[in-house]
Image 1 (cartoon, helix red, strand yellow):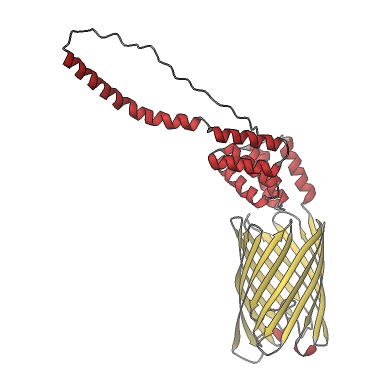
Image 2: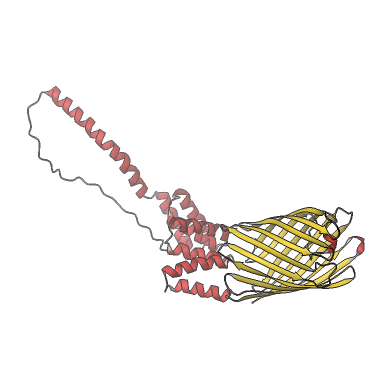
Length: 418
């Protein structure tokens, strides 16, 4: 976007009168003075409203000398690559002229160049809403979203730009970079080791291997296999999840897991979940799960939400569970919930702390956790990508159980994307 500024000088001149001269008549001096006085009054009555309109307009069209000088200074600092100083200068100009689209654009641009990506994205969103056809604001918004790791949102802006600028090299270059960074056939494999230290010194451990893929914009799937050693029994569990994106903001997911011959793990587990994205910052979830143990059946259901506020992530979840043991007609009802606060950094990195109340396990579903006790839990989790395609995730949680014992849960996961 060009940043040249010009001052328009308006000159006012008198136009020759087109009215014929009035015929002069001899008049008494008092009459003349009275007539002249009335003429002045009429002239003022006509001119004052016009002046009230013209004066503010002329003032608005003529930039204030202070803003003009600051703008020149900001342009000079920007050309000299003194970006933080240029940003401060443009912000000072905007404080004097808050309606200036050009200066607000450069504030947002310099914020993106100095790493203030969240503020830059918000500013570009406002600029595009104000001028939907502004090329530079739209392509700058796509850049900021790419740098923040919001690949889908950046692709949406670029695809819209490609419809209006099909042969523009800047747009095509960015679209190609997005395809190279995130190919349509996206695969992910991860291996997780988990463990528990139970009250009385007994321990449990296990591992889970999973493979997932996103073949297109609307479909994703994941296959999972687990091996667990708990209470002296080694059991295995396998299954998967299939997600279908019905619209841009609505997804339905179904899952199924089987553990033949298990006594600690559920023999079979089935789940159904719905997710709805509201705007760009809120995701709502609701899900149902059925767990069939050897001597008990459990129904679980409840809502959850994720709220993204800049670099912060807030999550909340409520879970209701009804358990019916074999040979009984009465079900045991349980309520549980959790809250978490996370800090996002980098494209996909996250640190979060969480607290929960209820009997929910933080590793695998287990027979000893149903209908037996409540627990208050605190924990921390950390996910970090050492490279765009390789990351690690660690979790630790401590449970204070109502049966008098404590439980420590932990896990370490490594994942690979390609």
